[in-house]
Amino acid sequence: MLHPLSLLAAALIAFNDFYLKRSHPGLLSGKLSDFGLMFFFPVMLYAVFEWVLYVAEKVGAPVVRPRWLPLAACALGASYFSVIKLFAAGAALHVRLLETIVPSRRFVATPDPTDLMALLVVPVTWTFLNSYDRLTMKDTSAHGS
Image (cartoon, rainbow, N blue to C red; front, side, top):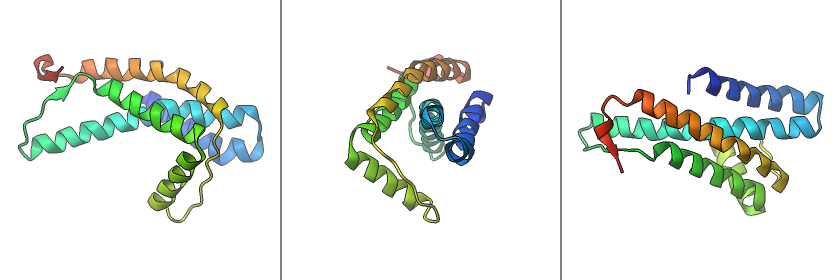
């Protein structure tokens, strides 16, 4: 998550949500966060998966690092995003989750199928995670199938 591309995506989301959407509402500011999110969210999920594997290994559990981890992070991120953008109930659950995590802030999520164009970023995210995953592997035999 500390890779410059991940930090850039997070900065894009923050700048768009806290400045552009308020000062310059419109089509561009309405979609920028979605594109940033479709890069950052799978990277965050990948980091969580990595942390769980790390903790499991530290407590002595047998750990087989699956080769499909980058794909799983991208698929889960894209699926979650799609549910929020397609279904009012999904958007409502998302808002409840965010407000549980950050109770001092109010959130809004409006289903908008046109936001699904941000899914175009997912193959880029997968390529990034897959190449990062290969670089960080010390022993390729530790990959699961």
